[in-house]
Structure formats: C-alpha cells, structure tokens
Amino acid sequence: MRKAFSFSILCAAILIGGTAVFAQESEERVVDEVVAQVNDGVITLSRIKREMKSIVDSEVQQGKNREEAQKMVNEKQGELIANLINEELLVQRAKELGLDSEIEASINQRFLQIMKDNNVKSLEALYEQMRRENVDPQEIREMWRKQAVRDRVLQREVQSKVYWGAESKKLREYFEKNKAKFTKPETISISELFLGFAGRDEAAVREKAKALVAQIRGGGNWDQLVKENSDPGVVTQGAGKLDKLKVSELVDTIRVPLKEVKTGGVTEPIEVKDLGMIILKVDSREAASSESFFDESAVRNAILQEEFPAASKKFFAELRETAYIKINDTYRPLVAPILFADERKEKTVSKQ
Image (tube, rainbow, N blue to C red; front, side):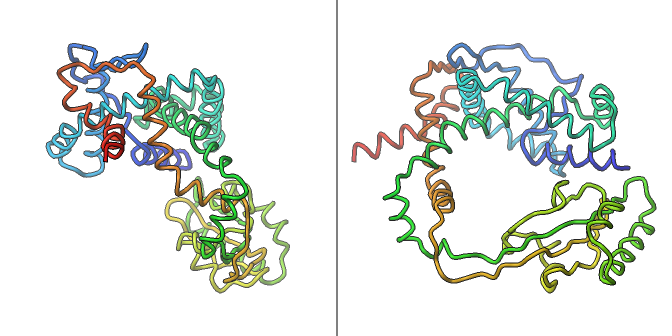
C-alpha cells in the first residue's frame, strides 16, 4: 500500500513538474532532420515530436480532449523549440562548469531515497516496480537531469551573483525604502508524530491516533511516544521537528488545527487522505511585530526575488549571444521571434 501511494505521488509530480515521460513503443517514427544546431549540439525533429507527444499525453491524462491538446501543442511548437534550444545551452554550460558529477549524484540519491521510502531492497527492484506502475526509470532520470541542470546552472550563474552582488550600501538603502517587508512575522516551531496507513487497517490507525492524543494530554512523554509509534513524518519530511515556520505560509490543513494550540500542546489527529494520521506538537510560538528590523539575509532574498527574472533573461540572452545557433529555415519564422524576443526588445529600447 505504501508502495502504490509513493509511486502515484511520483507520477503526479512528473505531470506537475514538467513534460510527461510515458513513451509508447508504438510511437510513430518520423524521418529525422536537424531543426537547430546549438554549438556542437543539435535539436532534432524526432526529439521535438517526442516532446510534443509527451505533452499531449500528459494533457489527456489530466482530462483534456486529445484533439484540443494536440492543437494547443501545435500552436506552441515555436515556443517548445525555443525552450529546447535554451535547455541545450544550459546543458553545455553545466558541462563547462563541471557540474555533471554533482548532478548525477543528486539524481542517484533521489532514486535511493525512493527505494528506502518504499522498503525496496535494490535499485533494480525499484526500477521493476516503477515499470509495473507504467513509469520508465530512464525517462524519469532524464527529466530529473534536465531539472537539476537548470536549477544548478541558474543558482550558480544568476542567483548567487544577484544574492551576493549587493554591497552594504545597497542593502541598507533597500531596507530603508522597503521597511514594511521586514517586520517580524508570527512563527511557530513544531514536532510531528505520524501514523501511516500503509499496510494497516485505517480505522485502527485512526483510533490509535486518538488514543495517543489522549495519552499525551494526560502527561505522556512525547519523545518516548514518538520513538515507539511514529513513522517518518510527512510534514517535517522525516526530520521530526521544524523550527520557526511562518504561520502565514502554512497550508490550511495544518494551519487551522494549530491555530488554538498553545505551546506544549498537541493538535487533534489530522487525517491526510490515503496517507495517514498526523499529530503535531507546538514547541514554541513567536508573535508577529510591526517593528521593522534589518536582517541581511532577508534583505538579500528580497532583492533576489525582485531582480532574478530580469537577471535570468539577461543570462540567457548572453548565452545565446556567445553561442552558434543555426535554425532550419523551415522553422526559423516560428522560433526566432520567440527565442530572441528579449534581445529585440533591448535593441528597441536602446534606440528610443
């Protein structure tokens, strides 16, 4: 039961996080051609067709009509190709930065964590289980690699530079102009006891959760009861505790039950459908304050949030400017206006 739930979440994450990855052996073969050359790499027509089919399949799985989904994807073909060109530039930059081994290690760790969470004895057994769930491990690996490449390159080449680029004077000036952003929010620190439904009678789990709450409120030792009864927590992602969470950022599922609980108290059992029962203990609360205070990290993060979109666009424009990009004449009218939109906008502004 735990396995089925975990893999269904994995599938959902794939559909939400990006292109669907369920390839079909009966997929129509196409005569291949180079749609775009990007330095030493190429974007082929077969790759584009696979990406388009995957997106259509994903939309259909989420309830859309196949014809409507295909029409939508066809209309966005130029955008898709432009994205693939930018993706290829990121992959090449990751290699230049020597990030390949780090990225591969992170992907392997994700598979190992899934293996551990599902009590599977080996990676090969995990892959076989995934295949039975109609999930191709290799395609999952490729999707995660794309995500990791984008995240790590942008973090190193854009985010870190914006975050650390602001000098003391700029930090202070930004704080003085935006003091309302830096008031102290209400925070809460919590501990978790989680009883999973996997492999158990759900009614019995619900009753046990109620009994544990009564035992805790009657003076039972929280740490001991957690040690004896709790599965790895879902709210705390296995950590058991989380400190100084912003109350305003909590989801209603846990924010509402926590609202009236005082420090040292516990919530009523919180049921998460198909997953289990959660009991949360309030370790501490800190009230909000209208007084502004300077926190360098918070100021840097606020500046990053504001400046990242423009900095990211500039970074991609610089990648394209220094790259050799040749788009097949058949596709150039579809792709070029989208791919080079920021560069053209910049030229237009500079002429004014």
